[in-house]
Length: 496
Image (cartoon, rainbow, N blue to C red; front, side):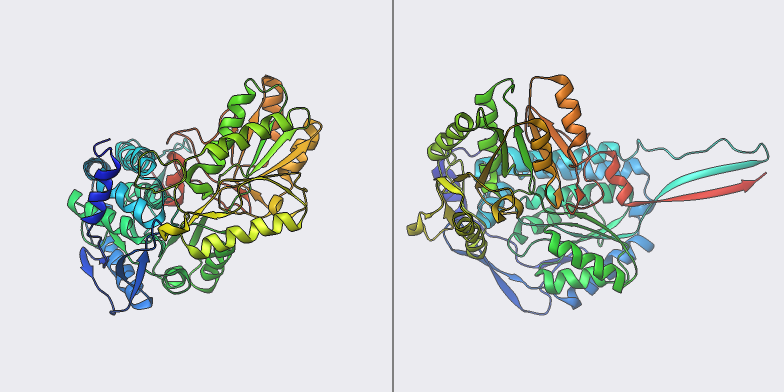
């Protein structure tokens, strides 16, 4: 790391001067003058008063994106030229890695080491990958009648509205912005009101990389106002959203009530992680399960929050996870030795603690954690928490907690494990631990999830698609398939 000590990060935090304005048509705009406080969950400190956008700011941003799409150079550039701009943006993200990592850590509580090593690596790789892909796509010329020529061209869909959450503010923005820009679209990004600062810095760097004005606009604001205005806007052609299933339903309604824009949704999850007794390494399975639920404070839609473990090894695996939870270093996100930082805010902590209380009421056994800690810091910290003896029909087994809370359910055979895994409205991800190749294939096919990890968890790269089934959403981020969300197929038939 370029900046490696706690004192280094503390000094940078003291010198931190966050952006606060919207970015519309290539200029920083204060909007109507109303603001909201961006509070760091690290210590409760107000980082800045950010411009609070509403319908007027969304209108201005969409108008700029529409002009840039209809009349500007970006959609008309050679794909290789668009690609070079995205690669320059990747280079700038890498050059500003420490500043961006600090911003992410301060605004949403992620350990700065993880922001630097994981999140910034991910977003940089995303823009670089799509930049390098931009000129590798080809159109089609199907074989048809000898007296005709058929062309199938893939064209940019138009103005894209992107609404992204706070848990991975740069990575998830990149997963939407990079393929949209590579395809030739223009974008209006609405980040979460909990994490607007890193998005504004991304917008600044995009302009520095050479994106023309209006191609990428960033508007701060809350979901019920700015998000709703973007979802209802008749000049938005595509809406891409990552967040809760409840809010995803709103965006579908907004589409129906406006111009029937395409809506792509990556929503909640309640991911099962199945450990069979023939797992190649039970200690590794336990360590990975603990990492998966406590990484990023458990604030992940793919978090393996339901550990389904065979009854013959349930106590062994659970005890290993409890030991790791108790040893986990929870503390200041700016300390590089911290392994779990702060939850994003007081309201979110209250919701997570509500799930903890409900689990006890439903008869689950608390094995460790469950309490708020480090209150003297002014920050928002929770102990890593593990429940076992969780009933399959309990709230903890069925509802997304989005925090560092693991539910352990025992099963007696593979068929029961698959039934438990699929007994949820969600279908985002799943894990499976087994040494048997046939079992790995059979169970992976039986699981209703967009991604299944076998003998690992949260692995992959940009070559593979990511998205959900059932109420976890539709469409795919990452890979070549993401471009399907931001392009239209046009057929041209020429009679010779």
